[in-house]
Image (cartoon, rainbow, N blue to C red; front, side):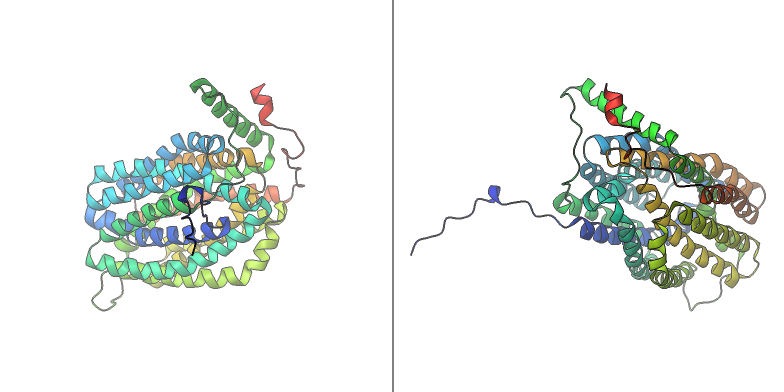
Length: 438
């Protein structure tokens, strides 16, 4: 009997996951990590590290300052060289940041960790959406974003329970587990992430050639934003959203901890109540998203309807923030927090789809990064002021101030919902990369 010649492993084709499957699975693992981390992170900062309201906001300001500095350069790198490389590296760096201040519970370790986190985040921001849009087509990303949101709601429920259980053992354990999961994501992407549709720019194999390519990509992205009313509006919206979200995200848990007496829940610590709020919020988000999914998919096809829906959702979110700050009842405040979280879960997919559909492939990561940079600028501009209000007056006053910072968003969405849709600039040939290389 003739023996078969063993197959040469070097000739074996590389096996990758499908883009949709990889995005859904890694997004679910990232949600698992984020929920385990963020369910207790503020409690960890307050009770273990000992941060005051101003320090809580300053920690966030350092993060956003890092994002502001690195968002566009890393987006340009993703558009010029490789989105797969950018995303994989970013996940690894983010994981290292959480491990750092999970192991070292000091203010300065947290500050350094925020810088590392910010750098890692910018490698993934924009590049992830751009990679997915290239691999499956921009017209299909809305459905995947919404489906991912539904899956992530269920994952979030499981992750919340895990977070509460391990935090009851020690408050630093969720940070270590979350950081480890980010490292696992980077390994999965390194081994199984495809990149078949992206074409790196043809650059001279010299330092000056690479720098010229980076500059051309940046200039094109900037010109696209300036030339597009849709993208310019979204960038301005992100400035106000960033200014408002920084204060709320950093101080909401502190407001509950310091201004309310938590109802007795057996012998458990207050961290369990945060877990309960997250669990009910996750259930509510899943039900609402499943019920509204067909409607959301229709909305993403129209600029005007998307703007109108975002205006209504943001208006309701602002109302809930005011109710959260003004309430003197724990259950009412917790309900406002829970409902606001559900609304933010609807806003995210709508906003991301609207953004992706208005950007040409070759500079998609760069432009998304520029819009993200606007959000970071808003957080830097608004966050410290809100933190100072919280320290000088009260946390209630600080959270009320965040609702005022959100108000201009409603006007911008209302104005845009009445405008005629603009043609896609790049598809009509108004802007091209070749103009900047000439």
